[in-house]
Image 1 (cartoon, rainbow over the protein chains, first blue to last red):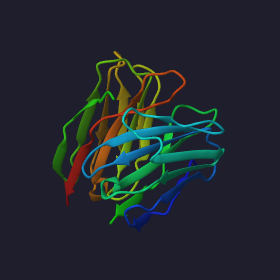
Image 2: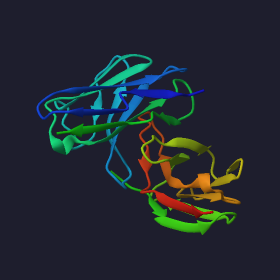
Image 3: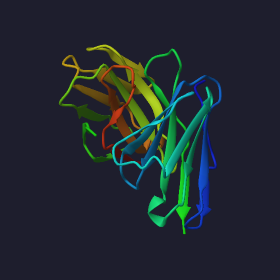
Length: 116
Length: 112
């Protein structure tokens, strides 16, 4: 149980284009999902908290117009990197909080984004 | 944001040895979580702790929630090569936002 998937697992795009990453909770409902970014050999950095049916809450320093988050259902949140630049290349990981359960976040397998 | 102090940063051990790593925080947490991350993968939840003093095991893994609520440790007994990876502690201070604070990770290498 508590499986989270991400799609795609890796993506290469050109500068200036937009990329959408999907995060799905497969066997549970998640009113809250989180988006993280991870650089090599570093810990996870929280980008934003995504709540179903409402606007996402972004961490300080994260551009909300660049990283668009939509949480339209209890099992799906999407992160769109708009007008991507090489410095946006990173490992993006989502997590989902079990609705009504303890405060345990279950993570997806991550998406490797490379912007050329 | 706030970071937990996780130590050691890395460990090189022989197969069969026991391992211990810990995290400390300057503030109180209501929840401690331990995750393992393999290269190119997302973190996998190993153990969750909810009460001060709680000691919980998951196979060869044992973790404890410190009585001061500002620290936690993870022990791995009789290590095997597949224990290799990065171990992260994470804490949650309560409230409704459920945001986790992560340690910087402990890189474990197990020599067969």
